Structure formats: structure tokens, C-alpha cells
Length: 137
Image (tube, rainbow, N blue to C red; front, side, top):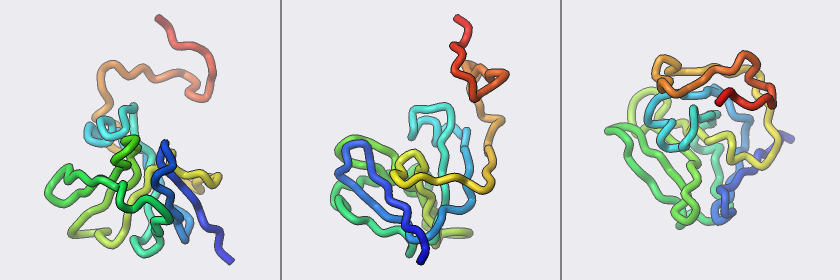
């Protein structure tokens, strides 16, 4: 039996299940993803749309069309970014899930950073990004 990946928003009003392992794991540095997450980049994994099951809180999901073909979905209570998808074109039958909202442990077999040329000037790239060493003042 395949593992089910469970996830939720910050306030747990919305819970969901992924019936397949997320694929196409990417860390997007584009301006829209940075603003949607309030972070340096957004980490997403994609699944076929039919593999996403909203377990609870479907009526709390709010949506924003960030472009003519992209819909971003988030919790209307706590604001957690949850999903984005295309309404047309390639991969319109897939949904990308904000990986930080997964409650089930998930390790990506491979991943990539995209739109890295859009990094803001304030970004400081640590020599060892896994270090707990404080950044310089």
C-alpha cells in the first residue's frame, strides 16, 4: 500500500492528504513565490490534481489568481500558503503543494532551485547554509 502524505495549514483548519509522493520538488526564488511565502524562496512538490484530497476545511480555502493562468490557494483563517496550480497549458492537471505544510516526513529524492536570478539584493548566501552560525551584523 502506498504511503499517504498528510498536511495542514498553521491553524489546522485545513487538512489534506496526498495519495502519491510529491514529484518535481523545486525551490522557487521568483518574486511572486517570495511574496506569497514571505520568505527567501518557496519549496513546492507537485502531484496530479486527483491525488490531492482535502480532508477538512475546504470552505476555509481562499484563492488568488496571481496571473492569467496561475491560481494560488491559502488558508483564509491563518494565511498559510498551501497550493498553486495552472488553469491552462502544460501541467494544468497537476497541483503544487507547499512542502512546509506537510505533517508527514518527506525527503525529496532530487530537487532544484528555480528563478535564482530573481534573488533580492539583501540575500546573503552563507558559506555553509546548513550551519547554525549567526550571520554577520
